Amino acid sequence: MFKKNLLLLLLIFPFAIVYGQQQKNKETIAIIDILSKQEAAWNNGNLDSFMLYYWHSPALRFVSKNGVRKGWQAVYDSYKKNYSDKGEMGKLSFDIKNIDLIDKENAMVVGSWKVENKSGTPNGYFSLWFKKIDGQWLIIMDHTS
Image 1 (cartoon, rainbow, N blue to C red):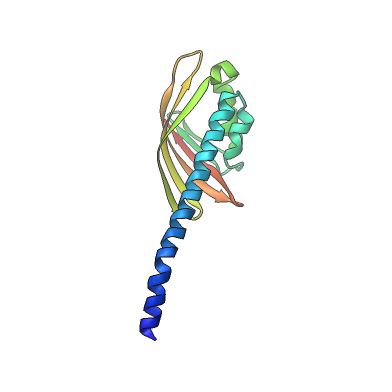
Image 2: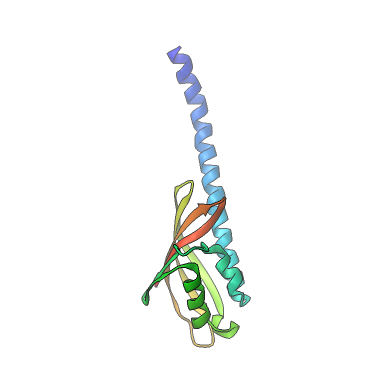
């Protein structure tokens, strides 16, 4: 009986590894897709669409050199104030350095950002905590410098 169970385990284990890797790739691709959609929304001057991927909650956190903003509305208002028109929004580009899937519902993304606009080319780095909420990956914490 032991040999039979061991043989069965040895046959199933490689498939479990492949399935796990496929699931990881699927989730990573979904997160990359979200960041691409954010770039496109920003570059079209559409802040509302850009913000769709932030958790619409008072528990959302955005950390920057200016401190911690708490809540979706505060983050939205800050973007609206600092990037008041399409010319100021300019062209955003992300360079994703790393995506770590912590578990089935949490991921950390590290990357850099650059905005080419009428005021110059501000740039920096970010780390994003994505959480899968109701089947959708959303940013629940953004640390941008």
